[in-house]
Length: 591
Ligand SMILES: [Cu+2]
Image 1: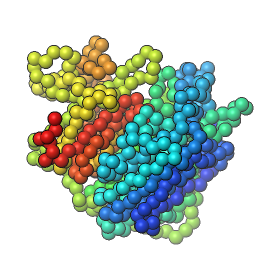
Image 2 (image 1 turned 135 degrees about the horizontal axis):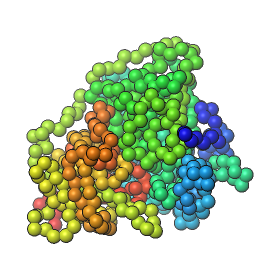
Image 3 (image 1 turned 180 degrees about the vertical axis):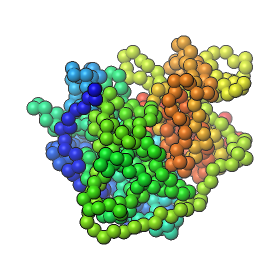
Image 4 (image 1 turned 45 degrees about the vertical axis):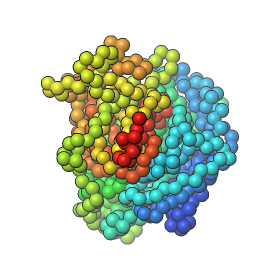
């Protein structure tokens, strides 16, 4: 029998908020953004919550910039007081009725974490997707305290795209972003204007998706205060209520016209698989995807038949056509992705039954659109979009350095599991010690681990302008969205693997495993590359039983950057590593 829980909040009663626009050109390219504690109402029927926000709001203002026109931001840390989030690990994964505690509000018998409650607001800001000099990229350890300010220069020498800025503090990004420290950043350029794409409200709207949970008062009523809750079995917080631009399940009145929706998943951990429904039937044909993380695709693509999958930090630029709909028509955006997400399929036709308590998805609702009586405007979708990139040729990649990274989960007895990215190096045949072997046909490559934790020595030194191939090998049971700072990349392949972790194979540093490039008989995934992943990406999903190859070329800035899983609870528990880009002429002098 399908189990459901009744929502304490009404759906589709708040209007979709549009974050305040901060157009850089109107300020001579010089912006000041205070980072402040504030109050925010996440739903009509909730009391105001304490939050931390850029500009004191959730989300922060949307910065709009022009390609080629630099933007300077003074990020002013004016936070006072302590973290406005109650953090807890519930003692049990499910309540007395067997309902997973993460599906429910409140602390579920957990106590408020004192160390989290004492966090006093050190921050650092990263512009995700920005081609930014290392000194302004927001290194996770270069913090500024309340009262300290940072002036960051963003050259904006990059194509039009939806970026976002957010806190990136070592170990506590999961709390700081959850508290509200995130905002959107749109870069515009001439190519988009030639195509006549909508720019600004009402026809261009950003949709920032974030799941949130709230505390209960003594009478068991929602009190609106933010709760970050995990449990003994699931180390990521998967909160039950989805907010869009800071409101739980909002409503948007639309004209019978095409809308450009700039969608981003800004959740800590939850992956969304979005399906648009009318009268319980999917209407994905209304949606054309024209862009991805780093802007326009070469041509518009349909969203995948099961829905648009966006893991944490992934973006989609969508044109949605409401022009043929009668006034009063309602379309509902639903999420069909259970959590933790492992790539498993779910038919769009079943989306109205997507509620899944065991999948930590009590409420699939995301938002609703309602068509107004108004003048009908139809818009043609251009066939050709981007003309400024191609797939890298085999010749360009022939001699490219190859880097291999294994994604590994280590179970611990007294603490939440540890996730690491093990950087691998090929060893000679006579090497002794724990090995990871990768077998393709009759070829076996032998690797050992050369780095595991964030603070281990840097092993990746990409040369500027040189193509590289990175292999991400997932040895865990969940999908990880892997994000590289600095330049975008393109996916080359996604292939099934069979793997075996040998006895006592996962050490704190070492790893002994054998991997074969063939499908596991129990593997249900198709390991396909979706059409919408064939653009310029900065975050890529690596599914279980899978190896993903991507081609990247770091182009402009030398320095120390990071790559990491964008599930914030993973990034904070060591699924993050440095790399250092170097100009070619300095390489001979590297020790
Ligand atoms: Cu991860």
